[in-house]
Image (cartoon, rainbow, N blue to C red):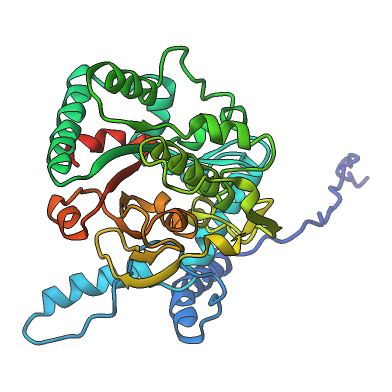
Length: 393
């Protein structure tokens, strides 16, 4: 009898084929990353060649580095100059900054340049601490010191005495900051302190310790803003209406000592609203085409107030020209007006009340110039945030 081996039930494994999405190989991913990196590297060169981003203009108020020339054996100098040139002119630079500014402001809700631009409420923008620590001044953490006030007083009295010997009277005009005129549109994080501002301190100090007259335009501007905006929403300056209001306030104060001057009246001007444009603050952020002032003004004086401009003198110090005018009544007192960039728009209004006017953009009062001009009236204008500079006038 033949014996057979005993068989058992053996479970045969079933072959299961799993279906899965194939992942890109390591090599493919490396090649893709390399291609993307190469594209990013050549994009600036392509843009400099084809000018694909030409519509995005630089918003910097300075001349960018020019392309250098290689002069042997000064190779190291060329490399350094070319690096600076490339950093300031590489392709897509302006477009990338525009994209960053738009994202930062519209998505994150913050200023892309917080030291230069403060984002306020209702479409308002304010200068940041880059401008003479204006935020700290407004918050009261950078108060003007007694020694600074004393230095300003002594400097002004020095000029007052010298001008008096020349037969001229000195006036000081401090233009209020937008922080002072429009505090209601500041962001909540910037709170004004309860004490006096630096302008208040200077105003009080000069009134108590000197006879230097100070032209106070703040009440006129505060009252006029109830009728129309007096400052630009997107700029560090006032608009033409604010400039007109301040100019008339200045003439009104001078007229107290020179009553022969014509009475300044707002009704003598035709004021027409025109579409607003983007100012210097939104230009810094490359967003001036998106954020604009709600309104600006075209202002024309009456025929009896037409002044004639007789000269324009380039002025590298301020990058704004000085201007000479003859007024409608040449027998009126002669004016020398020393001012900053705020004074430039006053060219339209101030000369109409004086016989001869010379409006100079400068941070210095030149006594020799006042003597040569045979000025009867000398007005020094400065913006509130820079009033400390009066000590170095």
